[in-house]
Image (cartoon, rainbow, N blue to C red; front, side, top):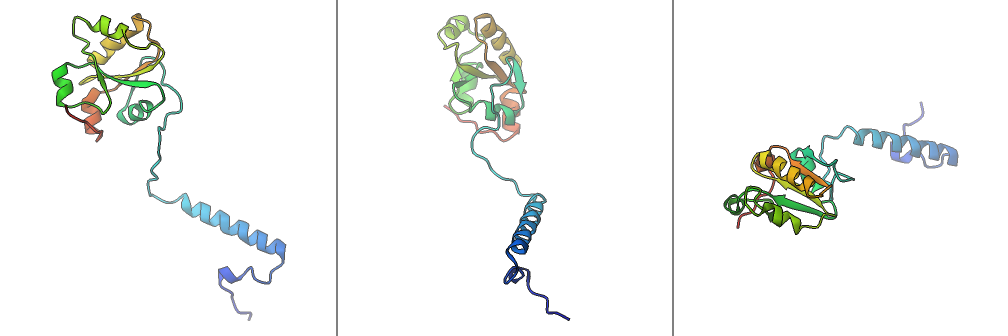
Length: 159
């Protein structure tokens, strides 16, 4: 009975065609086993390739990815006191309930995309409606507001 060769030695001395077939088989096995892995692969950059549809409400993970797209501004529409107690890093604060909200948003760049959020997503809807009426076309909000963001483990800064 012939001696069995270890798999890594099986290609030695074999015809080039057989080596190629062995290499292809090994590649298929390795790739198949990789598909069974339960490890999470971290990716850098957003998972969203395009700006979400205007007026969309996004879950925390989708909001996080979409807010990283180029020319996207994070807009917190809560009160200054709420903002100071904790907000998303890099967010701009314009209180939707302030008397000068319309004046404040008029100074914003309408060509940019705005990722809008508040405490629970009620005020962000009001803000997006006002912004659409003022000519802003690229808007989306955080479903569940900063409460949902915190529940999902999103980063919040103070100050």
